[in-house]
Length: 484
Figure 1: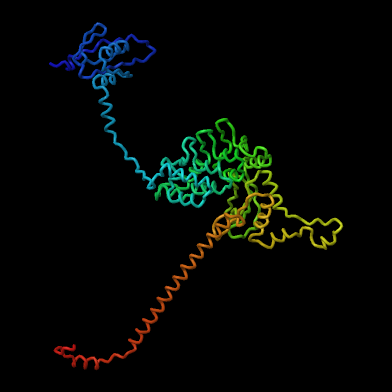
Figure 2: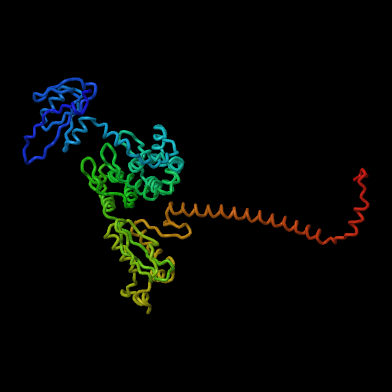
């Protein structure tokens, strides 16, 4: 009879002298088969390695481990589990894990764009530093990998300090156009769709917002500074204005020395220009905008809304009866005090004061509230408020944008950006008019051909059909005639 027969399995004595307050635990020792023929002695009992080694006394279990270097020790709360481990080791556990069906992972579409080489990234960085907006736009839209890495994070253009495109632009750009271009590209859902490809399950708008957040708030490796730190310490006021206009931009992030962008304003350049420092610090405060509110069908009189910030957008009362109000123009960003003053002056146009030596000439019996500004607001119901706000924005030196339906976007037609949008719109309309003219010319030629064909058909149908003549011609037909 074999030694592994259950009737001959020798189980060493187990010491049950435990503290009554503790639950007993069982220490099981599994010995591989290549050491089963060795004999061991524990607590005066000699047994074979093939015996079930289950102990309550951990010291006894450790003695078995010392005798068998390949043995394995494991503690269980029940004796049945301990005996199973001492007999089979982890085989039973492994067999259970192998029977668990594996769920197929969803297939992730690979990006079709090839990653640029390091030397290509250097060339791209040089273009950003030189301010070549058109070249940067062209390269970014041809291959999004210049701005987005394979890990869906901003592409690193300068190793070591780990600068992304916005770091480079915020550090060297004297004008905000390059920073605005980069943020507009990565925040465009069409750009994200181009990068990831067609996929109905993906929300391109959310991914664009995530990319914007990463670009605006990712610090560099050297000083742990964001692009906003760079723009503030180099005194680039217009760049700061562009960066803080995005609600994703966090203005209170600290660098390696626990300094916020406001605390290092103009520390690298223009340190003696107190006016510039004050203007940049005002931009780093919570920014507010003053809007013009209009109804969709223009049934309500346009009004000037309360100042709002990107973190707390205007809330309109949802009344199912009243028309829906929309923001059609806004001035800002500016500080809260500036926004309140701007709105007060916008709502209260300048009045003619009827006093002084020329009182009769100034007033002449007219109401004292009569003024060119008030007349403009009343006469031009479509753009009256916008025209007054446009002039006020120039006076306060704050940005201004208003909605233009023909381009379906907000723009200031007095600046280069707005003029470029207008030129692009006119260019597209010109191309459309040429296409329409060509199609019209082609249709006219087809119509002329159809008329000629119709005239020939009518002439043919007008020719009378004579059955007698046809029969005579058939009778005169001679099949032997070679001329036929």
